[in-house]
Amino acid sequence: MRVVRSQPVSTKHKANQRDQILALLQGVAGLFLLFLLGLGLFASEKLIFWILVVIALGLIASGAWFGRLVINYRQNIQLQDEVSKILEANLGDDFIYLRNLILPGTRSVGEIDGVLLGPPGAIVIQMDSSRGDYAVEGDTWYRYVRGRVNTPGPKPLSQFKVVQATEPRRRLDDSPTWACIRAAREVKAWLSVRRLPQVVVHPMVILGKGHIRQLKRPSAPAIEIGDFEDFIKRNFVVHPTPVEGEILPEVMVEQIATRLQSNGN
Image (tube, rainbow, N blue to C red):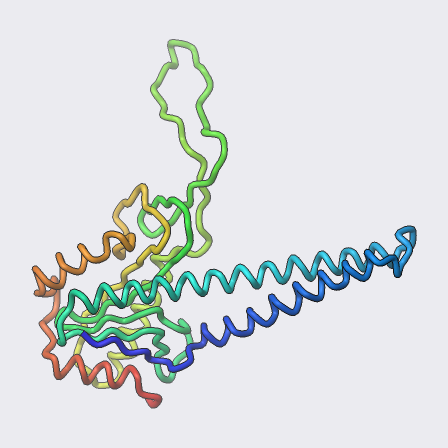
C-alpha cells in the first residue's frame, strides 16, 4: 500500500506553526510583565498596577490556550502516523492512502485527515485524539464527565421502580460522526461531477486516546485505534468484497488518487 501526503505543507501544519509562535510570544510577554511588576516599578496601590496584572495574566492564559492547540496537533500527527503504519502493514498495492487531503477547487470542509482508496471504494477518515470516555447514540456524541453520580431519591413503595444511577455526561457540540459524514459527502460530490467512475464513499471515525462505552446505531463506524487493525483485516483483507457497488480495478484507483491530488478541477 502507498501512503501519499496530499499537501507537502498542510494547512493544519501552517496553523500549528502560527500557534507555536503565539503561545511562545504571549506566554513570555505575560511572564516578563509580571517580572517587571515584581520589581516594584509600579506601586501596588495604583490602578495601573492592577490593570497590568490583568493584562499579564490574560497573556499567560492566551499563551496556554495556544499551547494546548499545539499539543492537540502533535497528538493528531502521532495518530496519523499510527494509522498509516497499520494500513501499510495490512493492505496491498491495490490501496492508496491520501493524508491531509484538500479537495481541489473547494474549501467547504477544509482539510480531510485521510482518504483510503482501494477495491471497495473510498473510506473518508476523521481522526480525534481527545481523551475521554464517550457514548455514541445515533450520530450524537456524549462525553462522560467527572462528578457525582445522579442517584434517584427514595420513593414510597407504591411508586417503587428500579432506576439505575446515571453518570453525568455532556453532549458534544460538533459530533465527530457528522463531521466525517460531511467530508464523505463532499468527496462523493467532488468525484461525481468530474466524470470519474461511481465510487462508494464511506465515513469512518478513529479515536486515538478516547474510549467508547456505548455505541448505538451510528451512521459511520466509530473505532478505537486499538481495534483499528482488526477492523482492517476483517473488512478489507479477509472479506475484500464491498458491501455495495463494484470492485474498483487498480488502474481506476490510481486514476482517482491522481485527480484528488491535482490542483485543477
